[in-house]
Each structure stands twice: as C-alpha cells, then as structure tokens.
Image (cartoon, rainbow, N blue to C red; front, side, top):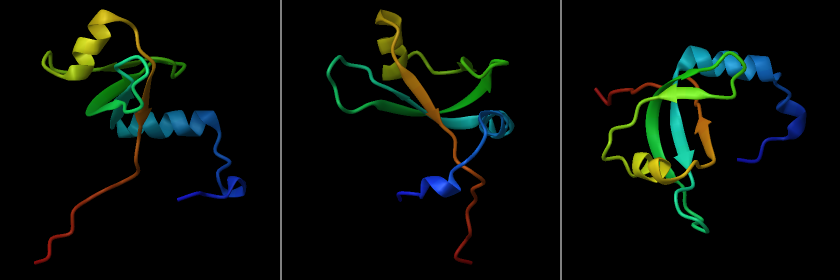
Length: 89
C-alpha cells in the first residue's frame, strides 16, 4: 500500500499517544552488519516521556537479545491498529 501523503498528516504527539495506548508492536532490529533482513519480534513495550526510548522484554534466547549484547543497534517498533479474530462459526 502506498498512501497519498495528503492523507497521512498525523501529529507526532498523536502517533506517540496511539503507541502508548496500544503498548504492543513489532520490534525490528538490523542484527548483522550489512544484512538486509532485520530480525523481528512481537513485544509489549512502554515508551519514555518523549518517545525516544522504549522499555520492553525479550527472552535471553531471542536472537535480537544476543545481537544487542554485542553492540547497540538501530531499532524500530511498528504498531498496528485494532485487530481481532472472526471465527468461521
């Protein structure tokens, strides 16, 4: 999907408020130098006051955890809107 920028005018504060209210997203971290494919993990998170940092939990065995122990890495959290499951019943 390639949305028209005219319809994507959302203030930073609104985006951060949405992310805080949701508190769950997909963490993406580039783990290897020159690797085009990031590692992804679903995570619950808490944002700092200015939104520049997130507190989250990963298990020790997660490859992202191991990568972050060796060096700081650039990361992003993608937060989606409301979701649910509709049973075929």
